[in-house]
Picture 1 (cartoon, rainbow over the protein chains, first blue to last red):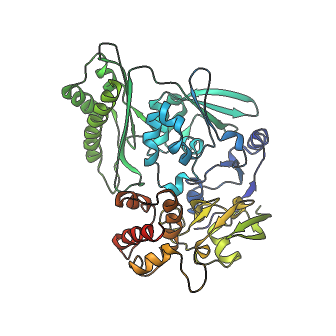
Picture 2: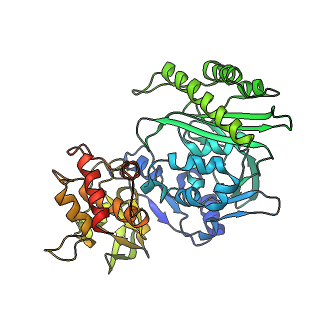
Picture 3: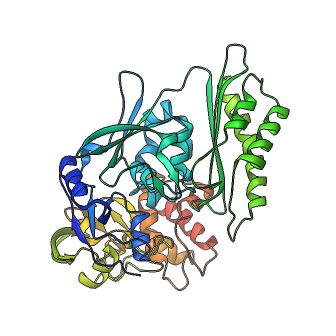
Length: 291
Length: 158
């Protein structure tokens, strides 16, 4: 239960960190909050020849709004800060609502936004929020920078689009349109445990009060964030009603998610929960959108 | 591989300078290098909360941090709480009075989780208390007496 030996470097600049990653490639891992990486190293499930500790890159710890109204979040922003930040609460209420579900306060004090996204755990909240809010993720390397849509970033179990020399440095969340409402609901056996299942809903209404756009994204329901596009398209043009919510929830739960079960929950039970939570999430999102 | 790194850490107000291997866990550093064995090691993968300390004032799990990461930072362990051998911290006294511990193994982690919690929530509800301690496992008490102890501590610390 002790990690294997490794070399440790703690660069003082992003440029130096990226040069080190370019040099070491897949033999090196970035160490941000370490709340998933270090347990995996303790178990020797993960092993790196070199750890590049990025905690000195304070310039990557920020929450601000840019001139386009996008919320710009530095990759090293601690999860605890996201949970409490007034800008996040005001402009990304879905992210604000999801944060208390991310593990425990002791973990959120260390864990970072970028670390959770780059780790790409299918049971994690932050990747689902990124997809639901159509976030853009900025990857940097010694070669330059590029933006990746959240939907293209997650490539399966613990796998992302990041190349071996790239680092996730920033997340941009576009502003919610007018008449938008969001909801995040998760079921876990105990507070802070991994989700048995969870769902993020984003709906936008037209002026007549019918659904213009919708998104339903699930956690712990497949090999990454599961974007239930068919259920979402079923909602388009519809006014909120129990029947519409049930139809969308059934479609997502029965045909679009792919839960694999665990010792605590069978796939059938996860699908059942998905159905129930989707109904609740849609109700809350539509209610909020019409306020 | 694994060359030594010089670190300077403030623990419980005292400055320590040590040479550490990169893979040395912070929990092991506190216990074996500094002799502060009040920080307990339970699961060693960030689940049980027994190793919780304050890292720059915020509760964190020392078994999923490396000692080398503490360089230049300020830590507090359970040894920082009691004023003297004869005078417990009000939170410790409340645990004593309300039977918030039996074997005591998990207690340092609970205490270090609750210190910042009670600073931020001086009058917590039972639901808030239960959420605050959700990241700490206790196999003796069934938690009820711990919740009672936190309520009593909040009264004492008013």
